[in-house]
Every structure is written in C-alpha cells, then in structure tokens.
Image (cartoon, rainbow, N blue to C red; front, side, top):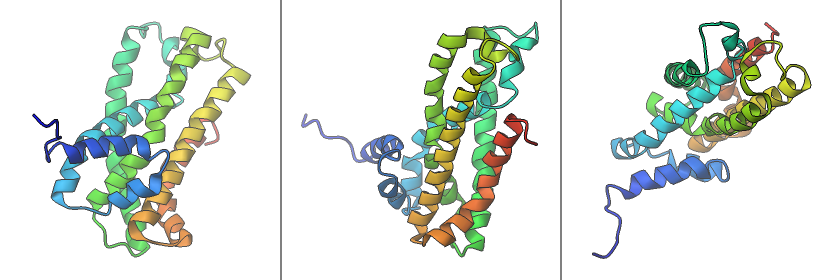
Length: 215
C-alpha cells in the first residue's frame, strides 16, 4: 500500500481542515466555496453539519433563557446537556436555513446570481466562531458552577458581564466572516458586500439585544 488518500476522501478531508483554516485565512476558504458543483457541495456536507450543530449549541447557550434554567426546580444538571443538544440542534438548523435565506436575499438584492445552497455554505463556515464559543463554557462553569444557570447567582455583575462580552465577540466575529465570505465569493468591493450582509446580520444583532434586555 502506498498510503495515498482515496480521491473521494481527500476533498472531504480538505473541507474539514478549512473549518479551522477559516479562522486564520478566511479568504482562501471562501474562495474555495466558489465551486458550487454537486461534488464540491457533497464533500463539505459533514463538516458543515458539525459546524451548524456546534454553533447551534453555542448560540442557544448564549441566549437569555440559559441564565434561568436552574430557577425551575424540575430542571437539573442531568437534563441540561440533553436540553443543550436538542435545543442546539433545532436552533442551529433553523438559523442555517433562515439566516441563510436572509443572506441569499441580501446578496440577490446586491446583484448576486449565486445559489441559495452556496450562500448557506458561506454562512456555515462563517459560523465557526460561534461553535468555538463553546470553549468559554468550561471556564465559566469552573468559576461559577450551577449559578451560571440561575438568575442572581454568584456570576451576577462583572463576572457575568465579562463572559457575555466574550460571547458577543464570537458572534461579531462570525458576522465579520460572513461579510468577508460574501465579498470573496462574489469578488465584490466592501460597500456591496456590507450591504448584502446587513440583512442577515440583523438576526444576531436582535438576539444579542434581547439577551441584554435592550428590546
């Protein structure tokens, strides 16, 4: 055996690697997304599914609902991971298709002739920072334990504010990547790319505003 990677496996491996590379060299990753063939789309399905699921869990944990879960006496530490997985999966899939549709509409108004599928894939890879936000939670739980999921617990005040700013930063990072992705895939200038990004960016902006009690 020569140790070579089968041709059918190599493209899938490349897209798994790009899920990490998008944090360092986003333009190279999004340039590869210009290929909207069925073969290329199929090769990136598995990493996209993983990203959407993890970003969904990260997104649902960042909502205001999470802070009051343990205020319900019937909700305990055993139920929490089940809730996070189920709610995260639903949240991720819904965001993938709904925000993807908004990104497609925004791009179409800006003059894009690209497909809804490719727009969703751009959104999926742009969402990697939201998936990465899960790394914050072990630290948060180590510091505050179950009070993380209680209103007015030991994490109230500055401690909670620091983590919320960090989580908001991951979301903002994802929006920036989406703008870079739209710009790179279409070869547009920044004004046109930002105009196309404005509509889908409203969803995380409103979600964060709600989480912070601004709306």
